[in-house]
Length: 360
Image (cartoon, rainbow, N blue to C red; front, side):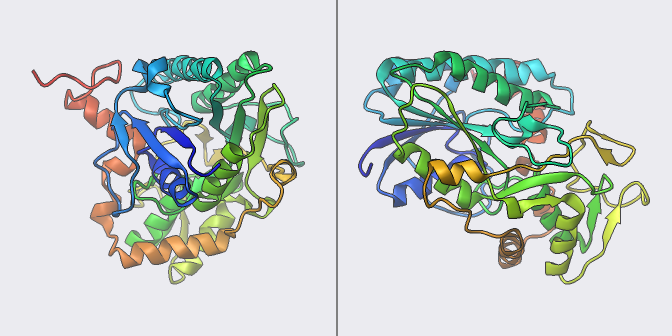
């Protein structure tokens, strides 16, 4: 409802930056809370929301005074492949997500959780939907499922949370990430004149333009859903279920017809932008699934993804060119979430518990 106050956790991340600005255009009074891990990694200037720079682990009930709805985005993205153990990243995420949801329940605040289609993990030849049994393959996707399970237990007559299982989000943002597949491959094509795959490209993935993710959040907070149980919705479109190789070929076409190469055949290729992935073995990615998205348009009448995959890719490549995006920018570790956190740890800026260190 116009004029309502919406609090976004993780408001200065890849998705939060865009969602906050979008909800402002819809008439909401938007405020943010963010630890600021990626605060300085600006891709381009864009509108921001008033943000309180604090660790979400330290939030208490009084921080939610006057709030009508919470969009919970805060958390560490991606499966850790470096030296950070998964439990260090994801155990706290589950704990503070539960606490924030509990506070929302006590205060009568609507709660929208950013989950992920990655909870499906592995599918057969058919499409998976909200009733399919999840098979998470990484600590990240398992964490998303665990938070959903906690929300099931919290839900009741006075608390009806919504979990949006987003397809893999891509597209421009003031705090873009290049460790998601379409963004990463577009960055390669523009800066290297080639697209390099570290798998055979046969795995299926659902994809979602960031603008369509923003509208899904808008629909969720404005729906006033009140059934007393957790509502789980896949967010994406059937058209955007694509094999990685298909995406690579589309990107290559829009980048002037550059070649698509496979790391398994060319081990000496430039690996800039390629994010290590423990789920890829001998060129095959064990995570492959196609997702059905019928339910979201049934629950949110009129909702439909507006950005086709090919159009979204063309948009991103055009923007990269307009910003004179080059190899040095593509190498900036701030655009790769886990790499950036490791840098902060190495500099002693963050503690081993991923808290800011005092300067005194």
